Structure formats: structure tokens, C-alpha cells
Length: 172
Length: 154
Image (tube, rainbow over all chains, first blue to last red; front, side, top):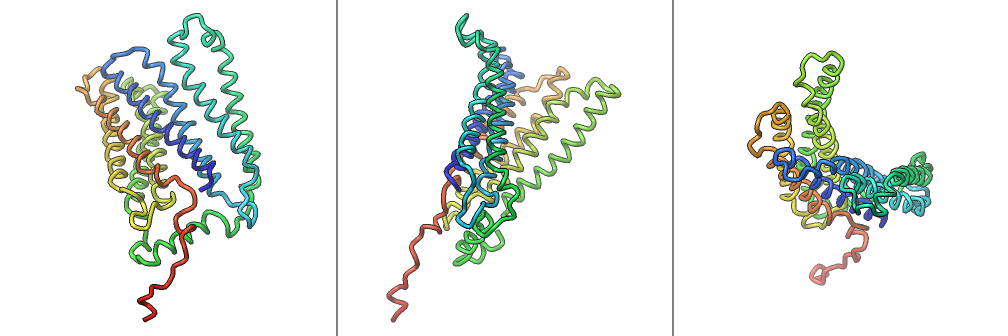
């Protein structure tokens, strides 16, 4: 698994844990309304899980398993995929923090509240940039017919290694 | 595909069917408005689809296809995976029953609190189960070539 995929998948796992925790708190507050402002975290929960967890995991796994471009195992333009990683997480972080900060008017009268209107613009631009860079980075790999250096070849090699001494693993 | 992954994926498929049926019902009710009680199922529909189907499918496929951990324990500690399965489905089922009841004005006697707790445990349990398997080239790629044992030559 390449470094970028590891980073994307691990970041996605962190968003999963944080998103589930925020969602758990929001659900808990339905039954025990201990902090009314917690309801403003509901949209953050959606962003964390739909984009931070699911979309990012899909990107990380796709970067790893899509067919490579040549026999040397090239994955195309990795800088664009890194740009996607930065923009996607920047967008999710901004979107997640916006609701709670806007509701809390924090800091009172300060810069963060004043720029909150155009923070949506930054978030949208960030998502657009993430999607565009991802498409540019992968447009060739998604059309490529496949070769012997891809994920499937790795799986075959891994299975052969596992089954060499323990045939019971063959069915797994 | 090994047992744990199969169980995750089959359960996810069952949730997909349930979510689509419930979603259809909610949508029909939005058009025909035959019962005011059905609207309370909307958040349940969202969570059946995103947690029961999508997230659970991802869990199952990830446990199956991510690189193996070691030859002795290819998939790490499978008990953490089972903990994630039990708590995810326990929490979700509690939510399916008690969230509409809560919306209709019944007291849920802490069931939603328990549901929230179980789902949070499920999320983190999966993170701990899969985290060590998010890694670079597998061990077999870097292993040294096997040498003959001296006893074999005798």
C-alpha cells in the first residue's frame, strides 16, 4: 500500500472515530438534553462521516488498487493526489467547525465570526479543488486495462505466501 | 472470503433491503400523507442506509482485502472485529426501535443513550481492528530467501 493511501485511510479512520463520537453525543442529547448547542454539531457529524470517512477511504483505496500505468508500477501524478488529500481534509475541517463556531458566536465579535460568510466559499472551493485534482490524477488509471503490477498481482502473491505452509488458509 | 467479512457483508445487504423498503414508505407518505407517524422514520432510514449498509459493507470489505498482518495472525485480533459487529448492530437496532418511539413522545428509558454508546464503541473498535493492517509492502515482499536447514543436508 503506497504512503498516500496509508495516510488517506488512516485519516479516514480518524474521521470515522470522531464522526461516530460526535454522532453519539448528538443522539445522547436527544434523550438527555444536557447541552442544547450540541444540536449544531449534527451537520459536522454528516460532513465528517460522508466526506471525511467514506469519500476519503474510497480515494485512498482507489489510489492503491486501481490498475497502474506501466510495468514499473507508476500511479500517475501523485502531487495532484496529495493536493486532493489536503483540500478534502481542509474542506471537511472547515465545514465541521463552521456550525458550532457560528452558533457559539466564537470568538465574540472576533475575526472568525466576521469571516464566517466567506468560509463557506473557501470550503466549496476546497471541495472543488479536491475533486478536480482527483480526476486529473486518476483519469488515465481508470481507463487503463490493467497489468501484472497491480493490486491483483499483489493479492495472488500474498495468497501464495500465506498458503505455502498452511493449506487451511486457501479458502479464506 | 473469510467468515467475519461474510457476516459483515450479508448483514449489510439485509440493511440495504430494509433501508430501501423504509425509504420507499417514507417517500410515499410524503406524497400521499396517509400517516403523520411515518415521518419519524426519516432519520432511521438515513442511518439504516449509511451505517447499516454503507459503513458495514466497508467494514466487511476492508477486513477482507487489507494487507495481512502476519503469517501467524493474518487478520490481527478478530475479537475486536466481532466487538465492532455486535456493538454496531446492537446500537443501530436500538436506534431503529427507540428513535421513532422517542419522536412519538414515548420515553426511551435510556435506550438512545445505550444506542449512542454502542455505536461509538463500534466505530473505535473498527479503527483499532484495522489500523495495524493499514501498512506498506507486506512482510513477504521483504523477507529473506529461505535457506536450507543444516539438518536437511544430512
